[in-house]
Amino acid sequence: MNDSVRRKKISCIVLDLDGTTLRDDKGISEANRKAIEDAVRAGIKVVIASGRSYSSLPESVTSIPGIEYAVTSNGAAVYRMGDGVCIRRVSLDPEAVDGILEITEGMTLGMETFLEGIPYAQREYVEDPVRFGAMPYAVNYIRSTRQPVEDIRAFVRFHRGELDGIDMILGDEEKRLALWKKLQDSALPLYITSSVQNRVETASREAGKAGGLKFIRDLLGIPAEETAAFGDADNDIDMLEASGFGFAVENASPACLAAADYITRSNREDGVAFGIYEILGIPASEKEEV
Image 1 (cartoon, rainbow, N blue to C red):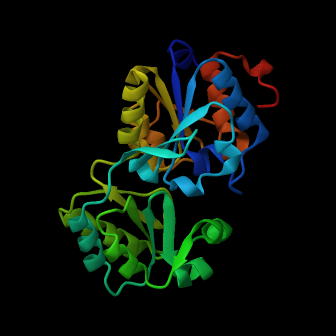
Image 2: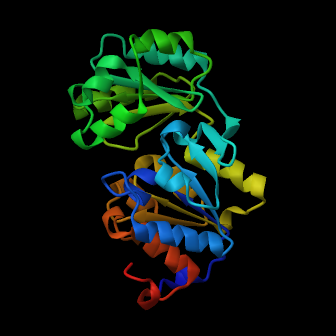
């Protein structure tokens, strides 16, 4: 048992999905599901915090009784799960959208955008994601969640004042870092992050998972020190740092690992379940195969 976890009062647990709560195949293990249910039964508020848009949240997690809120699109939109109502949205500034389109003009990359909880992408990208830099394991997820459009840049331009975010996918790391630097140096009002190594993800400067988490904490009257957050990627760092206790799964990025207060098991080894039972104070011998 980790004493520093045991000594803290935790009233809210915030869970990243991909690479953290979900296995590599995008499913949730029975151990993680049971641990979440046990946390809810213990009176702890459990919140989803994902880079995913609302419509692409997996039913295997959203169906767990007691999960009432979801921070989506890297903090750009917060939803109430019971009725699917968006209760907070910070859209990309139109100036930032114009700047992204200008900077990426002529580049070969995958582009996704999020509008009212739905992800949209160029039809060619949806049909062959790997060609545009997506990882092979993400193909089924992309094809099953993205709405294809014939001209994603025209779509983005038309909806320039309504978008939750724009993500760019590049398989070439040198080009990805160069794009990141251009966006960073542009002085556009952007929050720039990454959930996977081949992505550059942008949202409003007021977004970020920490911003979404603060909104929910204020809504529920839960102080920062009574929250615990679980993550694996760079887009989880602000959330871990804004929580009373930050858990990184063992497979997390180096920067995420450095930001965590505690490193739990990997997403392949039910790290979320193991961490939740640390919070609940249940000895390892009683964790039922965790």
